[in-house]
View 1 (cartoon, rainbow, N blue to C red):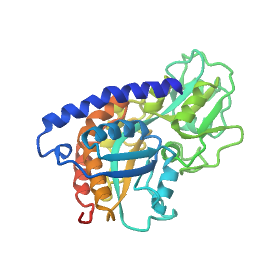
View 2 (cartoon, rainbow, N blue to C red):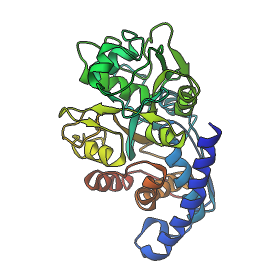
View 3 (cartoon, helix red, strand yellow):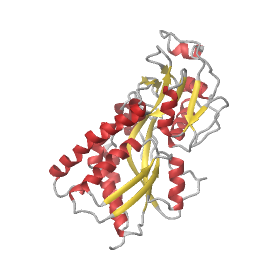
View 4 (cartoon, rainbow, N blue to C red):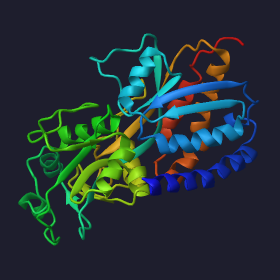
Length: 354
């Protein structure tokens, strides 16, 4: 975990130089080149998947708007959605929209997509490289049907691999998680007759599995447990130097998680009027099938002028310099059409006169 944090801090320091250059060359019409915002503090929490991206854009925005402070706690999408309903935060990050059965926010709100991120199936098996997994085999592993690495189902997809008889340790999120929701959504779609645990921010995992808090917690447990397998966002998997499998997509191709594959999945997804969309198991031979969306959720009508203007400024920064910074911390930028829709939606936030 220490290596992950060190690498992210290094990326943050390197990336923070970029917004300064962008501000100087973008011209007066660019949001970050606008007049300085008044003093405000914004508090947000939620998605841990988007945390690496948030660190960079919050730091860059602070350089552009020094009077605005943004605090963000990566305590899981479920907690973020709950806190947003309770209005204990000014915005929340989530990788999954509210379900009809969830307690809904007390006032109209917007979903603002920010970036796209692959969810890896990461593993720790000595000497095993280039692992390939179909949705069906992945479902059997995480459901506890397949319990050792030399199982015939794994061997059939990896005929040249030397698979040990090591016991499989399944690692999953212990907190309410959009990453869990999207990973299990993939299993529902890709293995509908095999996967029986359903989909959601939490599921009833089999006995003998191990839970960890946040994507970094899962990454750490996988890295330190021989025979472990878990689902981890791409940014944290890369930062933790984990091995991850190529996953069979809807077109029958085994695709290694990458930003290119995530972008292909997002391009193939249908965007709803509220800017929610589902790139999981999207069509297309290049699409990585476990690609996660992520949003910031914000109330339509703001009650504090300084905070409202700060939120709009921050979102505009995400949709300008922030998109250019995404790849530096292993996230894919939004497709152009969705990006334009998001920029238009920012203008619909209602801010009271100061």
